[in-house]
Image (cartoon, rainbow, N blue to C red; front, side, top):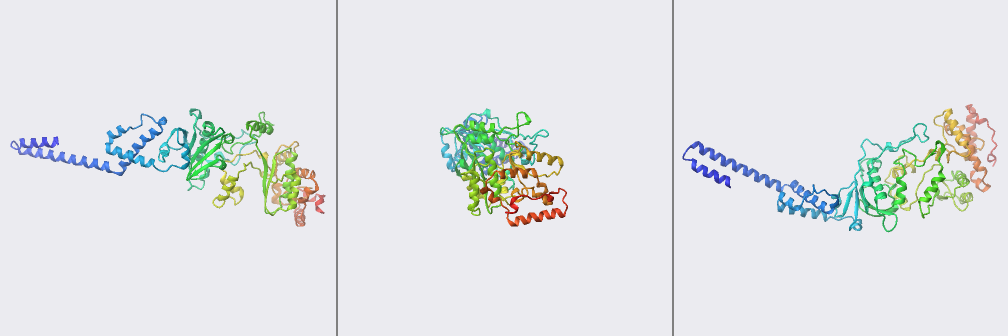
Length: 544
């Protein structure tokens, strides 16, 4: 107003003196009017534009976050209500605060009802504003960690081969960045957001996803407050995909609401898992003792240490397997059960079988192991029994695609965070390199007494499908990589210590006898250089 009034007075006083001055004054008036119109329109456009309203809401949101998480907010970045009013005007500020209240009025997952009150939350890969948007308030501390590099591949943690015998430098694992947990105090609950990219076929083998799981698990084990006088810590996870059952057990889940999962984690169990290597890049069970490769690791000492660490809780362990569709592996299972008992193991022996296993076969199994039945195939893996996990696997059987069409492929898609046992735990009877040095080493291990391998995985034709005189894999050209008379003889040593009832399932069918005779005939015709076809058969089962 003052500008236009002054310009008008100047115009009046100058009209009589000079026409040129009058024109100049008129131009000034028009210019001032144009500037005023421009600023007015710009101000209204900014005030009413949706993006500007969003900025107002964000400003008020940061104010609410600092109030709710005052221990973790910086005073230098906090915006007060009075500052917001001075910057944006009272009406705009009130609008922003009202919008924030509407956002916070959204329904929080029901499980967060348990987190009301003066609880301290440890946040992993999740922002404070994300919880506030759900109406979840409380004190919180952000757990900072360096995100793993994008060049880090799953195969770096799970290589196909490692130098477990320490022929060169021995196995080692790359480092997965972890927080400095000593910087943090105890928290009442760990809240983490787990990445899940279902559009990627390898979403369950994402290194960053594993990293977030491990950070949350370590935070719970090291800084989580135990609840109810027990050894359990509350963990809340947000994930579109089911969290890794390898770390967060199905049995420990106490609630789910959409993409939110709540667990009461057994810290002792979790800590055991976290002491394992970060992947299969190193052995989960040491092969050599403190003295190096000249000293085999004493497994009994490890078992004693684990027993002492478990306190009053008695740990039950068992050998277990599944037998279905036929009795083909029955004889091998009986001999294996006998071998376990001869080794002095007192672990339970568990068998899950279907209707195809006859009552006579089951009686033979029970005779082999006393009051317990046992079967397990020659592959070896350590599992933790869980009805809940079983039901979860059943639910997923039609949605998870096995890479090889079998159970092994299916389980590998579910349990991606697996750990490597020494190959001597499950020593394969094969000679892939086909060298004299390889055969000499393995034959020595198969014959060694006391044993230097913990179990032998009989690939190819099984010992009970051959005559005892030699390994019948020698008769077939493409099976000779599995042939070992030393390993064959080791199996028959156990067989000889069994009674007649247990030996009954190991009889050869007439069809199998014909097949063995035909294979020997072909080996003789081909003049096989190993000359096993010349060996005289003395096995009594040939005439049974």
